[in-house]
Length: 280
Image (cartoon, rainbow, N blue to C red; front, side, top):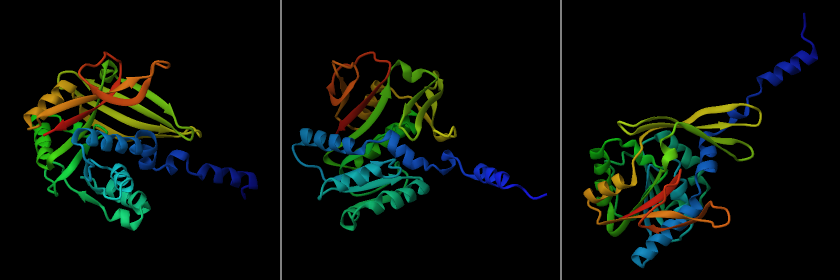
């Protein structure tokens, strides 16, 4: 018995891939998590304020798709960048989708390396970045201190190290948060937290208007480091001064105002993101 036209069309519709199946997880991550234009502006302005000169050379550790490194070389004609990541697949994606979009003269000032950040040896730079909490993959004090020492050795005499951290009492909860980006929804899941070791497992999922989901697009198994621990380890690794930058509050909305300033004290907020600036 031959299938009817309606049956054939129905089968074709069923065979169409879902939005989740067609999605590019790295593109979704860049859209939902990163704001590199703002971050690179903050990085440069912070360096200028501290060192009274313009920075040129930047190293992005755990660079992933190297979106930040690409933005750095794009926004300054004297800017140079080195991106370091251990994962060849994500570096290949970054070369194809981010580096390839740069003009050749700009791309020539960017170098991506597949290497372990604990062992990489490159020329000294003005700034080293460890953003998106990726350094939390080092779960033991000795190992994280060793990474910080390696960073210290990679900086010019007046260089600075910038890293981010998050916290607040919600950081210790097993929970999910959602944010709507129109064509997809970003879901941050804090799946587990173990208080004796301080270890946490988190996942990023994406859902789409057709009802499909990209589950565990990214998974992280970290130690949830606190600001006092990080500052102590930076001191032990040879940094003379570490300053915490907290975001200010918009008086009308009660939400963050996007302006990060040095702070000696913080507030017991349920959730916060801070930047640390460590100086040799």
